[in-house]
Each structure stands twice: as C-alpha cells, then as structure tokens.
Image 1 (cartoon, rainbow, N blue to C red):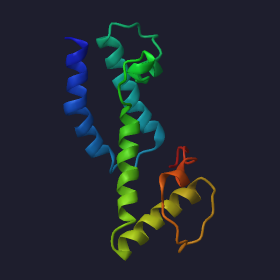
Image 2 (cartoon, rainbow, N blue to C red; image 1 turned 90 degrees about the horizontal axis):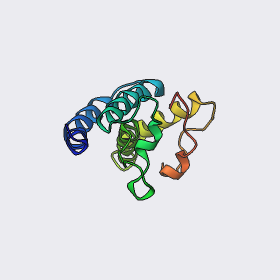
Image 3 (tube, rainbow, N blue to C red; image 1 turned 180 degrees about the horizontal axis):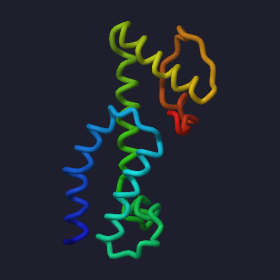
Image 4 (cartoon, rainbow, N blue to C red; image 1 turned 135 degrees about the horizontal axis):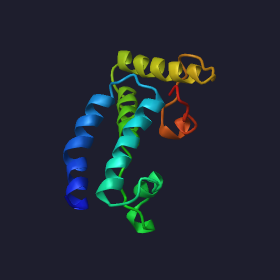
Length: 134
C-alpha cells in the first residue's frame, strides 16, 4: 500500500465520513485528540516511520517539508465553527441559538457575557477558546 493510496483514502472516504458524524458529537477535546492519535499511527506506519516519529511533523505543510495532512480534529472543529457562524445569519431563533451556544461555551471556560450583545460572532473573537470544554 502506497502513501498516496492511504492519503487518498483518508481524504476521500474516512475524513468526510468521520467529520460528518463527529461534528454533532458532544465530545471533549481529548476524545477528538484520540482520533488524531489513531490517524497519526496509521500515517506513521504508511510512511514507514518509526513509532517514535513525532506526529506533529505529519501535519506540517508541504511547503515547509512536512506531509501536509490536515488534522482530523481541526477539520471537525472548523465544521462545528462554520455551522455556529452560519446560524448567526439565520432567523431570530437561529441567532438566539448561536448566542446561547457561544455563551455556554464561554461560561464553561470562566468568561462571563450578557445576552443580547449585538456583535457578530466572527472567529477573531473566538481565538482564545482552546479550552477542553470548548
């Protein structure tokens, strides 16, 4: 099995299937990182690297000498965030839902906010939400 075949299978079948299911899952960050560990093991084996090979090198862009594979947990979180941000432009009920979800996440990491803040939920407001609860 070649590296290209493994990467093709991951990008065309495994990642889309897992991303669709996992973006609705209420998992903790550690659960998503477990998915990354399994993918990293597979990639290390497919690229004939040792088990001690640093997994982070697999995800470095090709322009910098890495393999350039997208991290599964990053893809899932991008999809979750895009769904949340799309709700902001929906009906008033959708906007309220997006605000409630974001408020819950912020309260979970100890940040207080009031409902009804009339501010768009752009990703630059959310850059510090790297908590396990988010």
